[in-house]
Length: 330
Image (cartoon, rainbow, N blue to C red):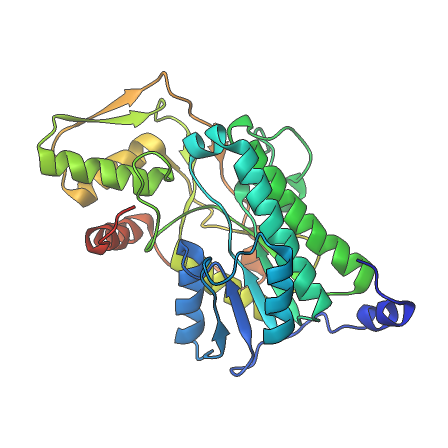
């Protein structure tokens, strides 16, 4: 891990505010996922055409030697680290060891290789689940590590905390310019619509759609419906990430969200409307709700000059269109 004294001295002088040029070599890790594919779309739309990608079959980010070889050969200038093993409450609660191991390996391998190959800047994508279960609302960035995590996704949260802290420690010790962002709950094109292992919006879209097709009288939604959540359209996240890569340097993470929240019950009603389902909604209160409320404080993001663009009903319509055009629908 350590560099020579000369390298440490040089590292401390590394440029902390580096702006991407249109011909910069940009690696998007996890480009086939919902976030990664949105990042590629946004970068291309803004004229960045030298984008490097690899599928998981071409490059297994859990294998350190393979990641080291890739960085040594490609020498990217900038890295967006969006690759991760993700899932909803059921998946996180059922496979905690897998979620911790895979995410830790991906993060450490990519960040370490970026460091070794003198990447100019790296953006690490975390998750709002890093914050304590009962954090103050809205949740400020300073809430990190001030309380217990939500048990149902603790393993995933611990892995993400480790990734952002590794970036912070490299900045502190070597003068690198690695930043981390914490998005709120995401949804949008290229999501995972699996009936059990998906997040709430894609899961409900699939459930309501199938109920509509089958003419089912009711759709069951897990929990009480009373918990509050904030949702961010993934293309808005991508826009924010590119913006921050070019404008922000600092050790403190940046929350990315809308600053608005909605109950799961109201969300279900909205998805029911978008899908065109005519039956009724039944809440299964024997199933877990998860964190009671989770709204990010986006004051810092707004002060940095960025605000969200897509309202939730518009975003849900776009997401449902994606679902209808998604051949696999995992």
